[in-house]
Amino acid sequence: MSGTEERAKVKIKQREAFYCNMKLLLIFMVVYGHLLEGIMDNAEPLIQIYRIIYSVHMPLFLFLSGLFLKNRAGCVRQMKQALLYYAVCQTAVVAVGRVLGQQMNLGTPVWHLWYLLSLGCMAGVGWCWFVLTEHWQQLDRGTVKVALLAVSVLNALAVGEYSAVGRWLSLSRTFCFLPFFLAGVFCPENMDWKSVMVKIVGFIGMGAWLFMYLTWSKEIPTAMFYQADSYDTLGVGQGVWLRMICILLAVFLGLFLLVFVPNRRLPFSKVGADTFWIYLLHAPFVKLFELIYLPWHVQIAVAPFLAICIILLLYKLFQWKRQLYCLPQRT
Image 1 (cartoon, rainbow, N blue to C red):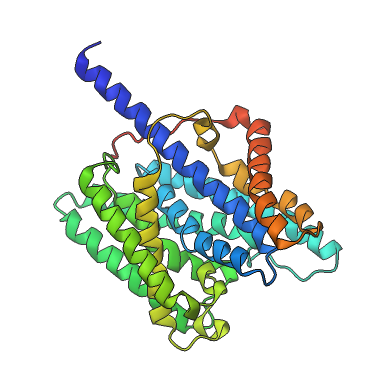
Image 2: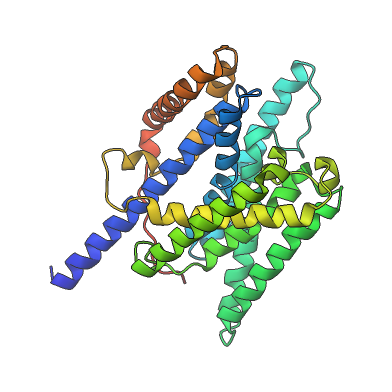
């Protein structure tokens, strides 16, 4: 093997490790955030941790979801898988809810299942992009990418004005998180998140995030970080401005995390190789924890440990599904 091939192989391994580490951090934030959701009550420290998690974890997850879509065949596969799992899981939850006398329907996702429905729809948008670039070879892709990102951000700001665009079919979340998904699809495959320039931008972004969070976060209702409801439903008067702040907070903190997360393989990196089943099946464990009352200063210590235990348990149960991610060239 030549020296060039050796270096290329090492670079691919580092890249795989980086995205495994990134996904592991994000799935920890998901599980930990859901644990806090049912126990934080009026404990201000827990509320602030919860708000910070929700300001970034799903935007960054959808960015990575877009990043791993390399061609239109991958988009079709992602769309079919996400919508199939949504249909199965939502139907099961609705059936159980009906037995228990709860009013649910197939079109309004239950709790964390919105991600599957929105991801399926976004994968369809990604498919359209790859079809467009295949049939319009003379397309100025850089200009079109900027235009599509700008339009997606404007749509995310505008849909909040319409009360009809909300949790039904996860329409609000699909529109609001689409810019992050598209940013992942458009991101260069060989992006070096550890370059000096990117690190400088990341730390500047962290400073901007800290300033914005301290300045305006008190004006943002916690529910607004869900991006699931219209401005009227949330009861905010400056909805467009506050949603723009939410988008910028996600961008700045997300960029910092991409710079901060190590790109070397660690003993626990393999846990982040496939987080789908952890995301899908952690909910029952979270609900069980909600039945246990503990003072908030005990919860703040117990919840992270419990989140790790849930992740490791589900990882072990579905270890046979594990796969490593690399990013071959898009076609």
